[in-house]
Length: 229
Length: 300
Ligand SMILES: Nc1ncnc2c1ncn2[C@@H]1O[C@H](COP(=O)(O)OP(=O)(O)O)[C@@H](O)[C@H]1O
Ligand SMILES: [Mg+2]
Figure 1: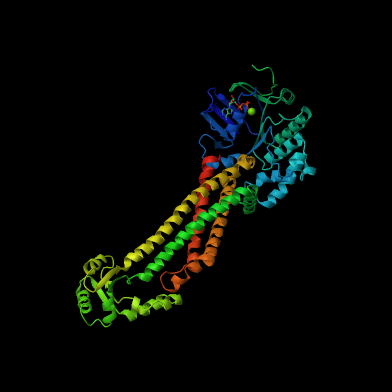
Figure 2: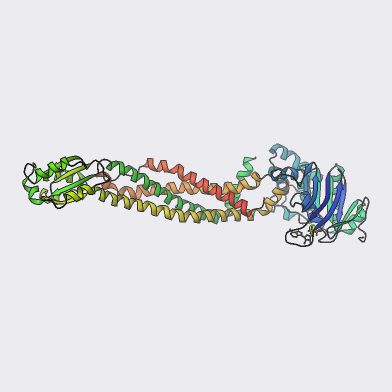
């Protein structure tokens, strides 16, 4: 599903590589935590999978795409098979909950009758069935993140990438979001979540890939956050 | 491609930056109106030229005493001059116009100004030879040969007057084109600026579109269409301006010369013929500017 082969990434404006000789494979249906201190390269890792960035060295494969050789016009296809959520939710403030979710389908040209059918379904899945008509500012942080997850999942992607999705949430709400991500994972969707939240990683006992200054320092099948190397 | 989605994006975009949109429409309209004005002058020049084609003449005006005494050109020096002109290899045709005929023509030309006709006596108009040349571009052959000959008062090369007349029209045309160009640069910068502003105000939206896998068409077409719609509105406004200008100004100013067959008028047809070009130019420029701006300034 995801394969990085000896990937290095050096940003033009910096001297230190953000990722250095990273090789990781993630299979279909896995749930993987990507951990490490701030600046260790977690977001860069995820951006490479979305082809927001291209590696300086090495190869990246996602689904059946070879991202290093991919033509630019095929990037939308890749992104349609990946769902994304972020720490800052990234909702459109002038659209309702349902419109925010529908937007993701409208802009990839899905027919209206499909949108009308699947948007309520996914809102029910994330537990927001009663709040379709609310504006984002009328929701709590946890609810906003649920909308973002609904938007990421509505097109039934093969994988869900989450970049510190609980970074702005209190522990209880974070736990709810984790349950939701687990539920999504159980539908067969691969989930890759970057975080530096110890308690979440420790309580889930899932695969942990740890980055330190751009290098993979640990890859545990059933890991805890631990104390680093 | 969902047309309704793109359409609603365009409308919101235009309304969100309403002041920029208006500035863009006005500059585009003025620059296009000037361009259109220039094109209309070109058409007017062309039509007026056909009016004078193979009519360019050199007039050899005779002295006052010949004009008074020899209305049939039967005595020398009139008779001799006529013979010489007829024999001249540069000359195509010679017609003698005596004082009375000259006055008749004068009356015809200034038919629209009866006061002027009333004030003019036949005695103030000279008799003349009206000479048509084999090569209308070389009137100096006749001017040089006949100026100062006995019985000749002066030789007037009509094409000289026409040249000056057309030069004035050409100058006017060039001026409108030049101002149109300056305005077009302003319009161009405004379009580019508006597209950037529009893309900036919608960066969150565009960011999400890119993340969920929207194609370039979806992310950029709204901006491009926004620019093109304003361009088109500008063009329509420009056409309206031209029609207004023709009806309220040009028709009055040119009424007399048109009646006297000195110039050809600008018709509604002319504006109709120029209009599609204005719209095409507007659409072309706004599309290209929008596209280039998106390429240069907006990440895809
Ligand atoms: N767009 C960028 N340009 C230059 N350097 C960057 C950019 N993004 C990240 N970096 C650098 O790359 C390193 C890894 O950053 P990042 O992947 O964001 O780490 P994390 O998400 O783990 O905090 C950091 O040193 C950061 O400063
Ligand atoms: Mg990060």
